[in-house]
Amino acid sequence: MEWNIFEKEQKEICKKYNLEWNSVNENSMLAINDSLFLNIEPINGLRHNRNGNIEGWYIWSGDEIPHDEENFFKPIHIYHLIDSKPEILKYLGLPVGYRFQIDSKKYEDIWFNEKVANV
Picture 1 (cartoon, rainbow, N blue to C red):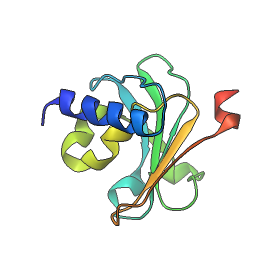
Picture 2 (cartoon, rainbow, N blue to C red):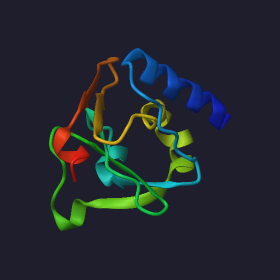
Picture 3 (cartoon, rainbow, N blue to C red):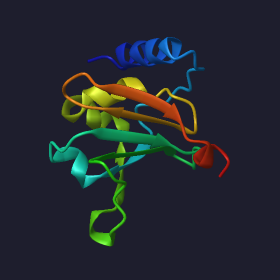
Picture 4 (cartoon, rainbow, N blue to C red):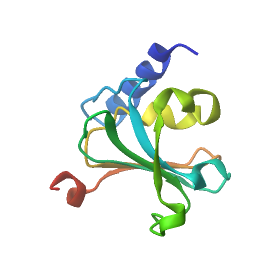
């Protein structure tokens, strides 16, 4: 699938929630937890400020943010998610400080996390 299709979806999500679209580059990296690939729900994303080639996104599955050393966050290029988790790509244009939560039943929640925005 062409990256510009995902960018269009990102813009649509931002417009739906009256937010400014913050682009990401498909060659940039984000931080994922291995839980993302275990079909655990819901899927969560949280955007911090960009740091070098890391877009600031932390993505995981389950109710809680994983904190143990064995199950922490690892960098991955965004383009690797095109085939494995395309459903999350449309949320990557959300601004810093925003979170999303989705599941396979079309549940979608997007909210601002003030603690992240002020870091």
